[in-house]
Image (cartoon, rainbow, N blue to C red; front, side, top):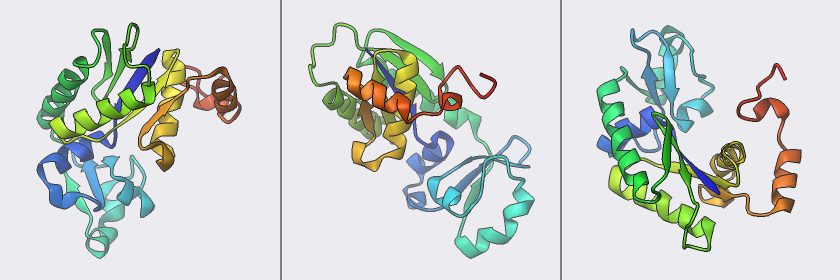
Length: 189
């Protein structure tokens, strides 16, 4: 089994870790030249703002909705990523850092029989030790773990952790997933 630990709204969460007053507020992070929104909070998405939109096109919304905008701070994001990954390494001897905000953990040889419970423990520990919220997908392959992670992020009933632990659940989840949404496949296939 594999767990995919994925930081939620990573750049925004990094800013919020040091500015708790930003919690539940619309927040956007700008590109290197401050031209476009490259990362945004859930609250900003709810206002209809999308990733990649030029900053000048949302200026009229900023004051009206008290949107907080930040220039990218890659030094901060790199440091926070290292903190998250160091925390994750405490849960598995086999960790594959996939990106600045994602890592796969091998759960081979795990003594905890309840994988969902183990995922909740990882999630709580990462949040407590780093201030960064994460979602966790657990499944028998990395691709299925990505699909499980997507469900963990979107379905609030999961509490941020979703485990594909049966053939029936795997089959149902794949039936509900567009082929173009499967990691590593994309629209061309």
